[in-house]
Image (cartoon, rainbow, N blue to C red):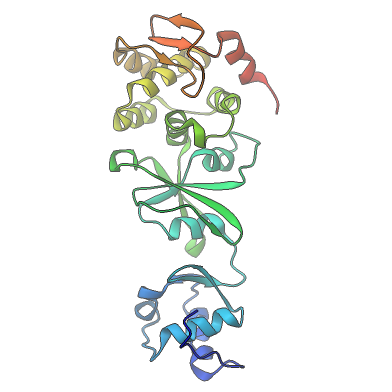
Length: 266
C-alpha cells in the first residue's frame, strides 16, 4: 500500500459506488487498467478506492493491478487470468480430467508469457513458459466469469511426457496414458506441433503397448518419425535398461513394470 493513500474508517460514496458497479456488471475479478472501461465510469482516485476496499476486505489483491471479490476463490480462473495466452496444464490438467487421483498442491499453468511462480489465495502457482507452437490443444471449462482454459486430454499427455517434472509421478503418468480416451488425429496434430521426436517415440511406443487397435494411425505416424538416436522411455531416469530398436527407445523402466504401472491403484 502506498504511504500517500488515505484509508477511510468507513466506506465512502466512491467506494460504495465502485462495489455497486461491480455487482451491476457481475464482475468477480478485474484488472485495474481495464476496469473503468468495463464499468463505463471514471474515478478520480481509483488506486485509493481499491486500496480502501482491500483494507476493508471487500476486495483481495491477486497480484499488482489484479483484484477479485473477497469471496471469490476459483484458483483456476484467477491463475489463468493473470497470464497471457495461458491454460491450466500438466499435473493440474491430469487431475482435472480424472486421469490421476493424486491431487497436486501446486496449480500448473502453461503460458507464452514469462512469469514468475507465485501464490494466489494461499495456493502455489507454477507458470511454465512455452513457445507459441506448444500453445495449442486447449478447451474451455466453466461458464461466464468462471470460464477458464485448460489443455485437453491429448495435449495434457503430450505436455506431461515433454516435461515429466511437472506431471507428478511417472507411474501415474503411464496409468493416465493407458486409461485415457485419446484420438489419433489430436495426437498426430499435437506431436507435429511440438516437433519433439523423443516425445513422439515415447507416445508411439506406449500407444502400441496400450492402445494398439484404437491408435493405429498415430502409431504409424510416430514410427515414421523415428530417428537413429536412442531416447529413454522415462526422460528423468537413469541410462539403463533394454533397447527397443523399432522405436529407438531404451526402457529404463521395464516393459513389465510399465504394464504393472497401468494396472496399479494408488
